[in-house]
Image 1: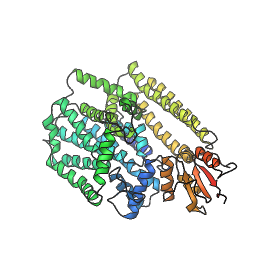
Image 2: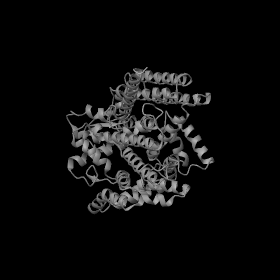
Image 3: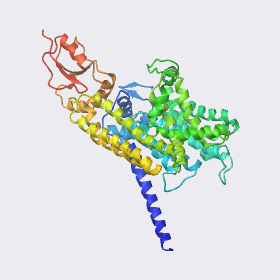
Image 4: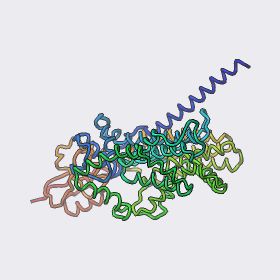
Length: 554
């Protein structure tokens, strides 16, 4: 009997270590696995990567430049981080995407820290919000997608998460979020300095939106709780000084060197973007509602227990000092703020996903010991989310011609069927196994599917969506100065420019010389009408057509 005590202790320690190691592997796979699986996508990734590479090559760490000209769409934090990767001679995709992956990891750890500080926890179990929240966040569609994106979005979201976590620490010390910690008395310099630091990083990542989101969320909380005096502690001189030291120098120097900076960045890319549809991203007011629900997949159903807990606190009027209400204000404000904007993109509400992941985790933990049928149906919803993801992938596959990408459909079909199978297993497990096991299986399944997709499917899709393989194919062309584009989408123009290390000119029908023209089927039809190409092309249309334009007869 006595001998079993140390044995049980060892087994508990081993189990705890296994849970934490498996969690670390899952998070690492989802956020960092094979970041170079596919070349840059869309117009934004190659554009941001170009600017970062140019910054690393030129040594000008103040003025972002695209094709040699100042480009003030975004501030400088992302460019600094990605330029460091280029300076370290990482591959282009790793250099440009690694900042987002590390930012996602920081956001995940911050949600875990918030769970640890504000909620009861068990070290060795998924009933611990400090462990479950980072896992839920890291395995959402939003985190997986944006951690692999060469853009400032995840850096911005992580800065907001870290700033709000620091603010929560200040409010907790003041007794506004639950009980005052033993030995804590009022606001101390450390959390206030961190609040100013991370808010400054947010401003360096995306501009004044960081102040709007953090200030708006805290203001919303203060309005409902009538705790303005506590909220104003965050405007402490320590926070203001640290913020000013970190954020202001670049803005001041950039404005001195570039007279157009303040007008272009602040007026055009902030005020005009928010108040007018000048950038053609107009969407209906309700746009972000479905986006948030999709972003949380496969964990969207876990918002149910969180919502029920919120209603209970509201009815009991006990939400005033609830950490959950602070998180709810934090999650709600970005959605409300950008719903009023005339320009809407999915990444705008990324800062709302970490607090929603934590709220979902806390709600799930509170009902895990409930063995009633309705609770089992709730966790079965995780399996049904897998069905939804599998159907979405199947519809995406149907849009890709089987002739365009060799062996893609076979690998894709196997992956979709596997996702359906995972869903079935999770639905069955929800009725016969503890909820934490269902969640654990889903976490591991997400990590496994992410790796399978990264290593087997994305490389096959590259010619359809990324310029990397096309640029490599033409790298040794004998006449590189005679390669042109013609009526390509903007994403191809930016991608080809990045991988060619120069902007490719647009072909003009008035050009009488022979040329290799990269175009679309519509562009090919126009070239044929002009009589500059006859016959057929040997290759199928996979993203780009290579058209050898003939010399105009004299």
